[in-house]
Length: 216
Ligand code: ADP
Figure 1: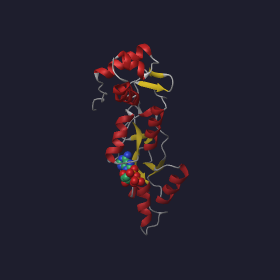
Figure 2: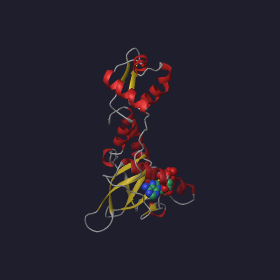
Figure 3: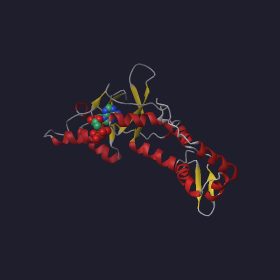
Figure 4: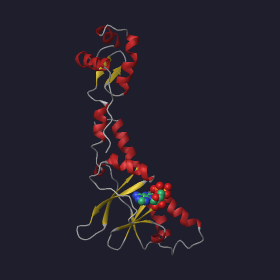
């Protein structure tokens, strides 16, 4: 994995953080005074430090130290695992008809279905457009099995419960897909059991939690 990008602070920005840590809440004017600089000179530095989360500013109170930093935020993101955000998977059998799969997609309100064989082992995946494409033809949807239109193993992108969610998010982007199954290898023999689902919605939820500080 790529190294976490840390925000590089200037010496002056480091000095400002130290001043606010020791004296906060403190006004911009007072910080400037301690550094023998003008308030205007400090404005860009204070903007960077508040935007990156090192400092917070309250009107008529001043600046105070949040105890957080850009790198701490990255650290949080880089520690979240799939298990904490996965949803319940929706599966259909490989002998199901395309018609039934479409009904399941509507009833379960999901955008991706996982296809399993008689041993509950993952064999395929169906997206909205896979089903739409099948509906465009003149074929009988009630008799057409999903197995002939699904994307099948071994071409399925999967993840496991203890994978880092940020790695899975990158996988969704790289492969240009909306969802992937969370799987566990069957104890005996080969094949994978589907235990969860990660979609772009789960990743969006993580983003919202980060913004509302639930993870910090
Ligand atoms: P849509 O087709 O509705 O835009 P996706 O972008 O998720 O939805 O799917 C694009 C194609 O990739 C479909 O043919 C689908 O079967 C396949 N696909 C979806 N998810 C996966 C996955 N996790 N692994 C492999 N192929 C997938």
